[in-house]
Length: 246
Ligand code: BV8
Image: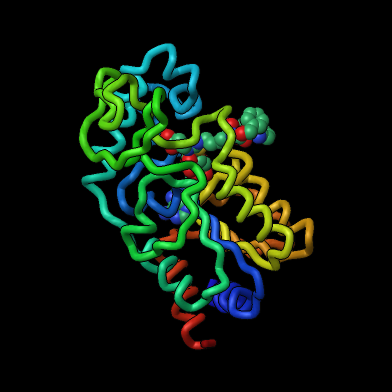
């Protein structure tokens, strides 16, 4: 593993247009359940059944119950060494484009301000009537009025399955994918698109894919650098190695 970490650090150090992509696994050591791990269910629902416009239209109370439960759970957790290491990585590699699929806001909380939250943020709500987006850390129900126009309902300001991703975010990511020579993928099952396609695109352009994941069954491609283990341990080790190279 030590050699792999040194190789990963060297590749990132020499990369001209690297990308960092994180998924729910980077927050697992903070105590936030991942989506597809054993603890990923809520009341026996899967994320794909609740994180959709159809589910919200059908039962906004149930969907808001799920988001309120997650907001409360996240509020009891804090960023872990992997989040802080990601912020250090950005300082050591100013060119690094940082993207997260997570909506917990932990990258920003750990000091990585320039992170693209491609699936939105659980602590923001959006009014279905006037589209106003507000920060909100309290419990929301389908009858909570919009602070701007007073109408209901509000929805979580996240991207649901079947919804398109924020254009301005995707434009930046797709532009980088045209020139990316390395991508560091941390704690994602690679099952949700378009994020799951980013490593494929980097590989297609002969870039290097470096993955950190605890799942031994995770099928890396032969030419990937697969670091099997916890993000909270491996990411800080890559940062230490990078510091030696810098
Ligand atoms: C879209 C926000 C246009 C909400 C989320 C192409 C092919 C097939 C399907 C599609 C496609 N294009 C679009 C789709 C449909 C769909 C999709 O991908 N479906 C999947 C289920 C097949 N995609 C969409 O609808 C996207 N929209 O593309 O618009 C379009 C639309 C329709 C049709 C065509 C085009 C929108 C997707 C966004 C959905 N919103 N979240 C919320 O959070 O409430 S996705 C949700 O899953 C989270 O954001 C989460 O981050 C994300 C991905 O999951 P992971 O992060 O990977 O988490 P997971 O639990 O799966 O894995 C954790 C990993 O960590 C594991 O591998 C584990 O081993 C590892 N791990 C655990 N602990 C650690 C660790 N690793 C390291 N250290 C540890 N300690």
